[in-house]
Image (tube, rainbow, N blue to C red; front, side):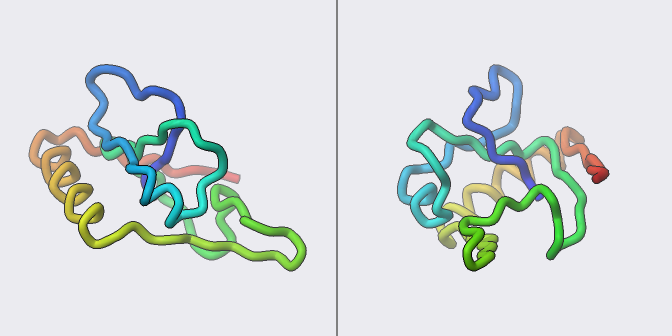
Length: 95
């Protein structure tokens, strides 16, 4: 899983700003700018990951959501750049 953040990732991070249409598609909370970080991937087991926040608790509803094919294409290009530059790091998240 690649982290999404509303904090400005700063200079030197391989990331993409998530367009507003993609934010709505994923039902992300708030309206602050959002980035997907592509130089760090979290490894975890789905379903049941404590990193995935339910969109509703009554009833419990978890949506992993998905980006459009066009945005996924942009992500894959940036990800290929990270791999070629040996800048992709995997982080095992513990409970």
